Amino acid sequence: MRVEFIDYIRFEISGFAKESLAGLGAGALVMDAGAGDPAYQVRDPRLRFVSVDLCVGQDDWDYSAIDVSADLCALPFAAGDFDAVLCTPTLEHVSEPEAVLKELRRCLKPGGKLFLTAPQEWYLHQPPHDYFRYTKYGLAHLLEKAGFKVISTEPHGGYFLLMSHRIALFPRFFFPPVKNPLLRLLRKPFKELVVFIFTRLLPPVFVRMDRFDRDRYATAGYSVTAVATTPRTGATSI
Image (cartoon, rainbow, N blue to C red; front, top):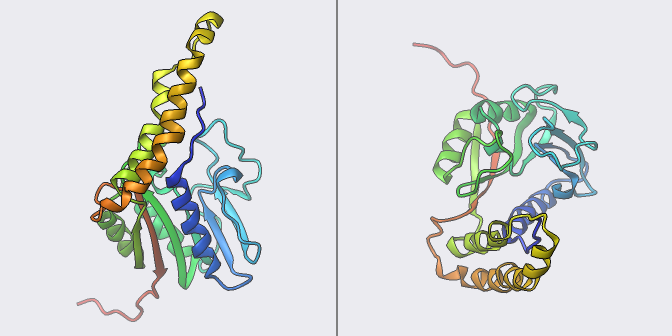
């Protein structure tokens, strides 16, 4: 059973991507690393995009529009090809995140921007290609090791925004698919009521309560902007 609901966390991620891309100069070349299904891609008509994905993990996604099918650990691009990289949300699905970040750094011009999102609290998805969750400190550690300087890190809301998503999933577990048409008919009124309450009524209430979580330690994830640093040259070993 597929239950649609207002996904406020997706709004956080797409809003970050749109705002970040809007700050790039016209004609900038952007790699969408882990681009996935076009339904989840964010585009700016002023910019040039190259979408890259391994094209595994989600059977119901349309990968036909992906420009380059490749492992993010071994990208078929020259060093410094790109002005920016958009990677949202992909890092939890790579088994070697440090290697991926180093490869993205290699493909960026010095001073190029990385716009990255990653989850801190999320359910298992796209198994078996789901490996990690990240705190903001873990992300900073990995990015700095890979040759980036972190410019900003913003949480995707706090506890209540996270709960707005969690409670909206309730009907999926409470109403598993059934083949018996009589049972489907009998449970339909109750199902519609439960779906309305948990996917339409309660999530906006939780979102409005999110202002009460000032620490935002319990967050769905983070949006990070980082810049590719210029490698130091002429270093002398002692």
